[in-house]
Length: 81
Image (cartoon, rainbow, N blue to C red):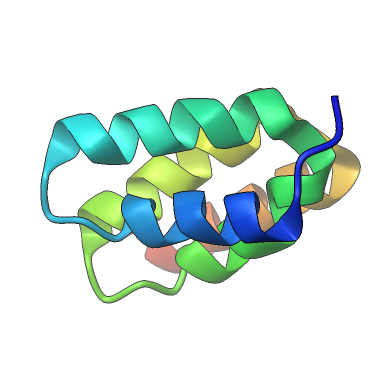
């Protein structure tokens, strides 16, 4: 199934909500989309809301492409301690 960039953009925007349930639903949908959503999720690792950052990291771990895994490793290292 081909997912449009507009749909990915909408889901990424929904991830920035302060509410946990819509954020989780958007993250889950982005995981299903997979590699096409990785670059947008990587950008969410820099969101001002730590809950959004964590949701993005979790989604990237589930997608598990080399790029996604490297981004999560770098984000984790920068946020540990």
